[in-house]
Image (cartoon, rainbow, N blue to C red; front, side, top):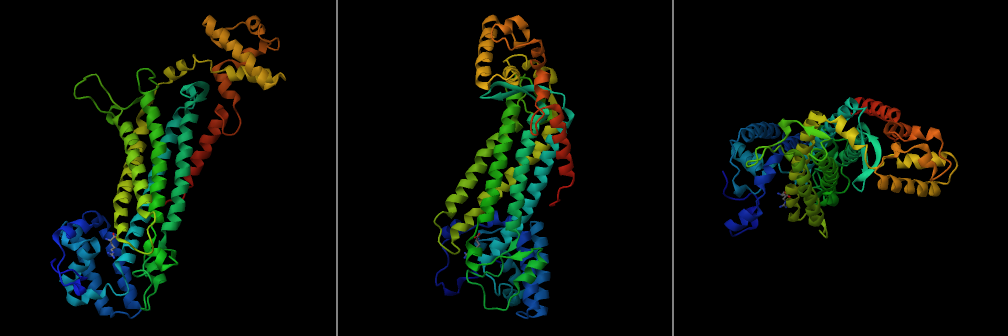
Length: 465
Ligand code: ARG
């Protein structure tokens, strides 16, 4: 096979070898082959049902397409660059197998709406799989949080000790982020779930096609509404890449924390050996490379989003060959974000939480200073005044190298006579944590409620794959 191009009628010269190599997309769009065949079979069924081609021809074409799928799955068809793209490879092979009747498949269809359909089918699966993987990562976070409801650590702002929080609360912050990621992907799924075939090259087709039938065959609830938009639109690719960029940003923040927490300075966590790597020179090393790689891959996923946005900027209607380039960014994004979610879901349950180190870290940094100010507020002192008083108390502690809870009542009363003996109850780490009972706060009761709600929510989620 190969040789003459399927579109070469109006050409008097063959294609320059360099142009062939320059324009080819087969080396990456071959990934779409099952979708291309699935789409072609549905199209062919519709052509026969509408009597646009004979039922006998449709059957010949469909059984050959099924064989070609097996050939491609088994690596039997060479991906020679002469074929340009996956559509041409499959169509050429079809004609080679069944003769000129194979040429009827492309009736009422253009590669422009064909590629839109292939990518739509691919992306619909990719979105569903990504949602499944987000669920797995969320389950891993929730599981780790549920196992550690009694672990307290310093909460940080500006990377400085701020207020004590439950480790479970900290983890559930990431659960929330991924929950929003899931919502965004669900929205993307709705928009990707519209069947594009039938737009033709750009203007639709004069043949009496039945787009709704093709949609039904391929499990789409609706068809796209404007043929020009359909062949020019890459919004769902863009949307997926932007959802993925945000997911990666979330994972990267979590990874950064794990990396910091695993340093000898922190020792808050230890990541299981199976998820770490050694050094080729320093025998003592155990490095959190998985977390570092997730953080590193984030840059590439952002880059893919930027290349897609730039690709689409100023592109006139309708189809332009520029659009072929979208797949490189899309495939890389799908593969990267899915592998990152997957590895995170595997690694998180294997994290050993060092409860004592986290607790010990809460002893420095005056984590209950806000509680002390809130104590004064509860005695009707205006918050600004309370802030000032406690600021002075903290300065005194720094000077005398004491913690807030080391101070005797008389010492505190040098700063305000509002302090009474009950002040002691607001100074401990546990009292601080447990006083934060408001919805969304770190109090043990609030966190347990949040964990139960998260678990119930996960259990009744709609399955996408
Ligand atoms: N390989 C092309 C792409 O990925 C398929 C559509 C080609 N259409 C065309 N008119 N050359 O976009």
